[in-house]
Image (cartoon, rainbow, N blue to C red; front, top):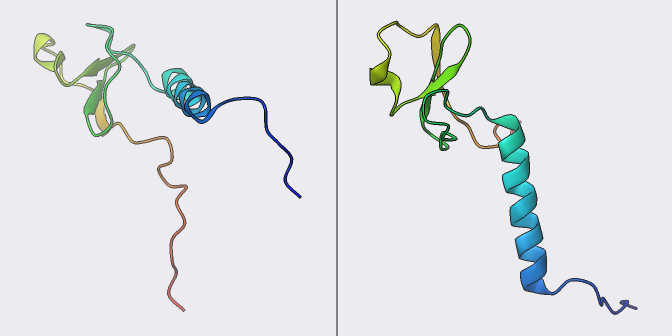
Length: 85
């Protein structure tokens, strides 16, 4: 038998899950050292010795970055995949 749930409504639950996802993304991903913006998923981030710069601010720097990588979603590599038999 199901218990009645008198806590959160459906919209409150959606809002809570969205906030939890945004907060965990904020904690993991760096901000641009130039503009302070958090790079979006799929955007390139350029790493220098001490900081990271987004794709939009990259032309402001003359030096070449040490490395460049794509911003991946939080679940990258955690998906379930079918393996060959």
